[in-house]
Length: 264
Image (tube, rainbow, N blue to C red; front, side, top):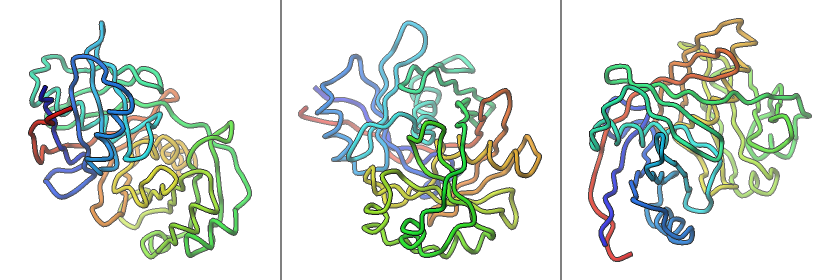
């Protein structure tokens, strides 16, 4: 049986920008080992799988190594495929995920993700993590409950731009991925995301990271609406809003490629 597959550049207004994700619509769930094998073969930061549900779609995300609880750019990519290629007629899609119900609303050519905000608590700055990153942070935070990516805050955009992490050392120093962030020169905040723990040394644009970044910067800057940039090599911009305990992220997506997966 052949399965359709799409590769989409998310949080991008043109190909070769933003973060690429694979999207595979399915009639029913395949074996988890096969889903993981396809994601490994795709070798993108995420492969998203969709199955039609009674209301909306079930949605799962796999890196080349593991299934993850939340992924922003692959959710944006999945919604883009439904709207642009699979004739979804509504203005809003409901996705059933491991992180609860997620909504994506279409505003013309742009899509808005409605995601849960991450509650953060201060933690000690880990010098081993900072040594692996290549510079010492001024502040560190973790999700309440201690599970999930750590957020390390720096003073200047240049601090973030010039980091050259030792990924083997970072993997040894931290059980969790690391988000680094600072005030932006031409936006409210810049960031990068390092995740060797999940098989992604540096993610180009990370929607799920902004579930932590947006509440943090909204509180620090006393602003509800924020312009955020992830300054990876590919880069991406997110127009964000923090409202009623939710993080709204708006961006565009572009289809790079579509085809079929054979012989599975």
